[in-house]
Length: 107
Image (tube, rainbow, N blue to C red; front, top):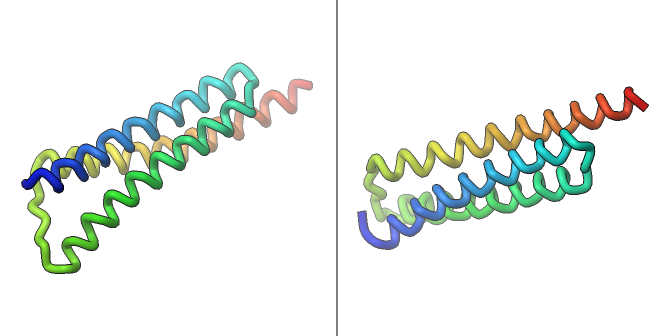
């Protein structure tokens, strides 16, 4: 794996971790009724996921242009981070909605 590929994999890992962290902060904010912060954190998570998507697109473009991407444990780890972050972000959106409904019903 060359330096460019390592950089892209590290982008995946960082973006995935940041997205998951922001999604978790959204849940915590919704739990205390701060839905403005919750929505902002969900949007922040989406931005990090877009960054990860852009890194993946760059890797796919290289592959499509004939520059084979070796599959390493680090690459698999990076992709795993992104997939888990996507799942966690989706779930966080649902949890925020549930907290909103619970708060609305208790009023």
